[in-house]
Length: 473
Image (cartoon, rainbow, N blue to C red; front, side, top):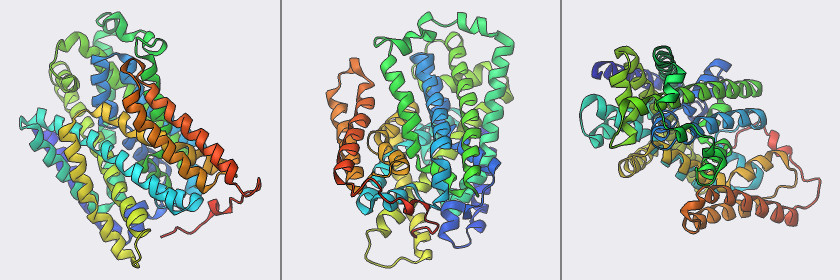
């Protein structure tokens, strides 16, 4: 499979490098592609961010090793997030002409809240980048026979190069190519498995507890942890920087809304196809030393050659698209919402473009290092969104829909939720895994309401700034 994979990587790199011509020296073109993207492009790009190495490779490994609902929790949570963002956030945030998600916190709550949101989302998305670089490294290692660390360096370098070339243009153009390969590959693989084996045979080949609803309904079966993962992804992903950059680049609020719904459907379909392959692998692959290798092993040994190739390439493309988008937005947030906001020096548009590109390098290095130390795609995704679910989701939603939300309330909410998550990590026993995810946002909400009500000047708190038409930068 090495030559199809190599050709796919080369095409992705060429497409990404070509989009350098689309930036035209503009930091706004680099960041939100001129806010001109139509429905199909936005929907496809959003799907590419959700259908990643975590929702495919990580999903299948969790399904194989833990159970169906542990793996399926990832695409279910991600799809639910797209539906929630489409219903409640896409249109109002697109109408604000934002360039980054932390800019919303600046306009609504001020500079301190923006800084806190920026730092938390930077940490969150470096972990997300790591999860997808890990998937890229594993697949390249399987195909080429080279070491994981060597393949991790190669994959990271390619993604980094085309990210800094075209910014969001590179992300969207490569997304459109990569995600359609993934969709075709996973649909073909799931269809082949169902056609040749049939669902009754697949279900009969797995232990009863693998599909049991006790994974959702009992503490001993992992119900609390699985629900926590789904809820964390569903709401925590509303703080996804890469999702929101695509929402901001849609040409109209309605385009952004419909794009989220379109992406949500594809995320659920392809994620469940990946879960199905994980189930089929239980009877086929048998015992494996590393669950992360379940999907690559199944694709190479039990699928027709070209379907196996498409699955391999699909995982690569899905992982590359998400790593690329996350790498981009982290560097942009560092440049705009941290460096520029807190710098006393005037920053020109050309300097902002340079900073956005330059800061992608430490982002790529940090993500690759985490992927080398902790190469666990599915787990890294959940950890990433736990971070922002704990502290930032409440100020985001209520900042849009509650007039009496205040700067002090937002800061208190972010700090309380984040500290609570850190404490719960050590204090919650393993038997209650999941409570450490669900409790912090509740405490964050209590802090937000209490402090906002105590500091709001009146019930008629002005919110006209939310419709501001001019970006802050």
